[in-house]
Amino acid sequence: MVRTASPNVTAGPTLAVVAREAGVSVPTASKVVNGREDVAPETRRRVTEALDRLGYVRRPRFDASKPPRLVDLVVHSLDSSWSGAVLHGVEQAAHEAGLDVVVSAGLGRSARGDRPQRGWLDKLTTRGSAGVLFNLAELTDSQYAWLEQHRIPYVMIDPAHEPPPGAVSVGAANWQGGVSATEHLLALGHERIAVVAGRRRKQCSNARVAGYRSALAAAGLPQRPEYIRYGSFEEATARQRMRELLDLPEPPTAVFVCSDHMALGVYEALSQAGLRVPDDISVVGFDDLPESRWASPGLTTVRQPLGEMAATALRLLVRMMDGEHPEGTRTELSTRLVVRASTAAPRVGARV
Image 1 (tube, helix red, strand yellow):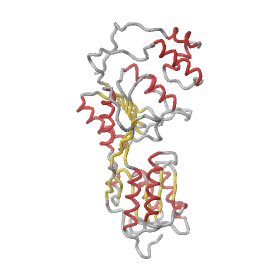
Image 2 (image 1 turned 180 degrees about the vertical axis):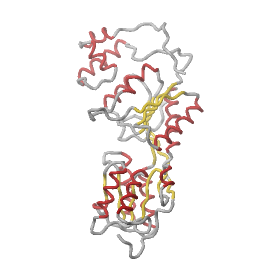
Image 3 (image 1 turned 135 degrees about the horizontal axis):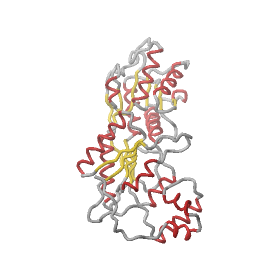
Image 4 (image 1 turned 30 degrees about the vertical axis):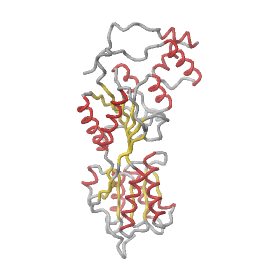
């Protein structure tokens, strides 16, 4: 149940007083309070200092004898099995902690396509949430600053980029997962191993490719730049990258795909080219989503424990809500290779 603010809270300075102290207009002070990005850095600094100096109350006050029991989970979208696994993990951990969770799919791009939507930010303080979990979030510097200014604890679940210093995050051992996937293919006898990755700027994508590179180096194999293909984590992009690999003078006999969703696009490209998995090309994915089991043949993949990651993040957030701060800012959970039918030794006379 969401608690409402007590009507007997002692009034603090008004926003007009803060604006006068900072030498700005009331609308400008309001923009800073609400985390708007269209404010000059120097103006933001003056308003922030005035807010702190005057003790302006930025969020509803609650009865201290009844700690808030509401947290927010902000996800990129709700239309994937990835999100479902995260939701399940948060739900279980929240039930154990006696917390209610509000889910917002608020990190999609705006109509202009230049910045994340801010719906979750606008509603956060009015709900009186005690903390926030972000999944696959791409927050701006001003949004991070807004959370710090409002003293709202938050934990990142698999952040898309390196979070700011001091931010707490939970993720998977992506580098080790890339090593495991590549070592599996090497053990089967493959030497022409390609990788289809997500965006270069994604933290997890870079770590998985780094693991792939490390495994090849440890095996004494040269790294072939033409075998490393970046794109996005979309099925269509992976399909195109696989077609590019097949057009090479010496195409790979195996491919490590940095997500199960992309691996489905790779499967489609191979099928359209008249090639069979694993007879002609072996494929390894990453995630171990339900799709990996439903694919034909079943997809060998690196399992990252999405539900456990989400539950761990929720437990860390509860500790932070209680005034603690984790000793380390980054928690990594182990990955594990799950072998199915999509990998085999390279066949003599294969069609690639």
